[in-house]
Image (cartoon, rainbow, N blue to C red; front, side):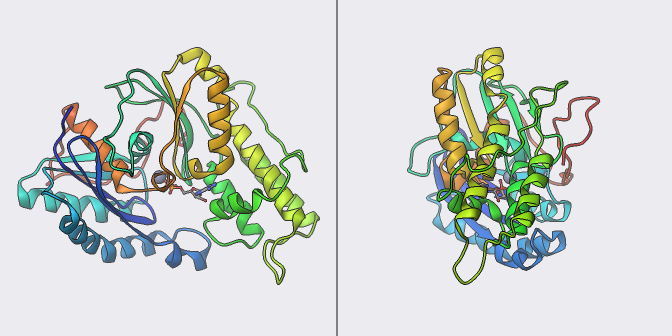
Length: 353
Ligand code: KG4
Ligand code: ZN
């Protein structure tokens, strides 16, 4: 199916990104300006700083993207939420003004729907793929960790989720305690490759009343306790030692087991044609390997996004915007507002951070 050439804009957290996709969902341009350096001294994202950095970067990235694209966009897609309200507003108002000024249609995209679309994008010039049936999808990032069922043409349904911290947040926290640079996920991934995942037996709690949900707080505390009791540090003249590698490998294995624990039950119950993972934690070497292995053993195809599209990017927002536009979604550029909280809240559940 052919879609309009689409301009995508993403500013929900600490990455400013602008992308242009052609009518088949080929990524023509995907530009990104990371704010990691601006937030690093604070050990996490500072909301006010994020908004200001988006304000600086977005007009420059958009101008450059339009120069690079082979033709003008015919649709504008922007992340409207969830995320930091000030950061979202920068993207939303920019996109709305841009669409309004050119008389183009505007679609507001849910950031999580963007992540869910990312496994089907290519950075090698291929059109976007479209699965022919239900997809079982893990989104694991700095702010979210949940499994969804995505049926073609329907809103995603959340099946299980974290009861406390997100997986990425857990990686970042353990890294911070070891004195490793922010964000911690990529560092932990790198150092864990040198360690033994069976060196320490860390907790992998499952909730009896909600077997599809997971929890990271016990695992995080146990790991931090070991860092302190063993006197470990990730920095120093000789760098991290074997004890740090072993602890990080054991910790990473426990996070992956937590995330993939519900997989057999979910596959049995929902019979998906494809299993995917997306979000920053889907860049993790062990998670990718284990999902391929466990999915294969369950007889289901595993589709992973290119590593560069696991973290926040506008290509996935443009793609989710194309799919939403095809379903008939449109938003009034004069009225569109940021929507900081999560959209698919099952009734009676408390808010997921
Ligand atoms: O999707 P994302 O860019 O932002 C959110 O929407 O939250 O995800 C960022 C998160 C950070 O917590 C980061 O540490 C984690 O993804 N991350 C990783 C890896 N790369 C990024 N975690 C584990 N292993 C990685 N290789
Ligand atoms: Zn994200």
